[in-house]
Amino acid sequence: MRKLWLLFAQTTTVALGVLFVIALFKPDFLQWRTQPGSLTIRQAVTPTPPAGTPATGESFAPAAQRVIPAVVNVFTQQKIRSTINPALQDPIFRYFFGDRLDPRPRQASNLGSGVIVSPNGYILTNQHVVEAAEEIQVALSDGKILPARVVGADPETDLAVLKIDANNLPAITFAEPNSLKVGDWVLAVGNPFGVGQTVTAGIVSALGRTHLGINTFENFIQTDAAINPGNSGGALVDAAGNLVGVNSAIYSRTGGSQGIGFAIPVSIARQVMEQIIKSGSVTRGWVGIEVQDLTPELAESFNLAAADGALIAGVLKGGPADAGGVHPGDILLAVNGSKVMDSSSLLNLIAELKPGETAQLTVARKQQVMKLSIRVGRRPMQRADSASETPEIN
Image 1 (cartoon, helix red, strand yellow):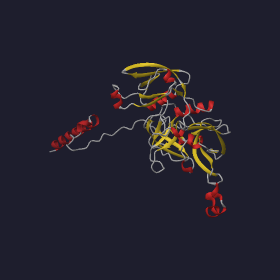
Image 2: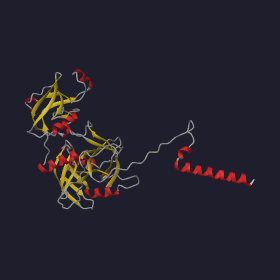
Image 3: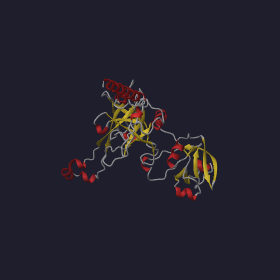
């Protein structure tokens, strides 16, 4: 009996030892076969966040602290003059209607935001924030309020540059052009509804938004970071606090943020700002053509393989394109080798040309591709209120 018990104990010990070794070195051998209908979860491994992006649970506070001192509040005043018929100035009318018939100028206030771009007092904002303003004041983050003057404005991109008499200001840092990607974190900083300096966070929803009817030249960043009235002219920055855009407009049915905001990219803002500071205005190229988008139906009628390019609907007589041999009905495919996708991209390509230089236009005419040399002219200033009423002459 004692031998049997000893044999059982030894057998059990050896079995447990074998199971321990298998569990330690080959645990898969001990897993039961998956039964039909069972659920297997594949857990994603959290990737390492890119440089400059807060990891989960971390804060945007360092980026916000870098940006807030460089964002200012812009207050403007405009006099509204009454156009009341002088006959209504009769004392009896004034007795009954009072100030409603007062012809004296009244004050209208507007508010927005701006970004300090230079320690010596240059501020970038939206043109519509300071349009027709007779008095402009800028409130710095430390509470100091200073008068400002308009150095220059560009209605076609809705940008303006202000100047205040101050030095050693906390200027913002510009991000590298085209460094932004869809899905990147961004912060919107400004003064919404006049409540005071506010920071909101979101992601880049889309890049290169055009055909919105907001500006003549459009290449907007779309973001879901909350942008509200008063944010116009404020900063859109990346997670490291570098300027990637200037907040400009929102799509809203209520007047408040609905998750669709638009900002002017830093590449355009910097180019316009530098020209304004240097010369007080923006100079763009112009060749004197009227274009329209090339639809699939039009492409088929011209026997084109794809609807890439822009249809030249008209050529200004005596203009650069006319002198260079461009004809109505030509399909413009490229400008200096840069492919034309549609009429909006063509407008930007031509505007980037320098007046006086020679540009090469690639056109398709009667199923033949040819290259024409055009001497670029200077783009006439377009009225801001006529962009949607008259055809655009590029």
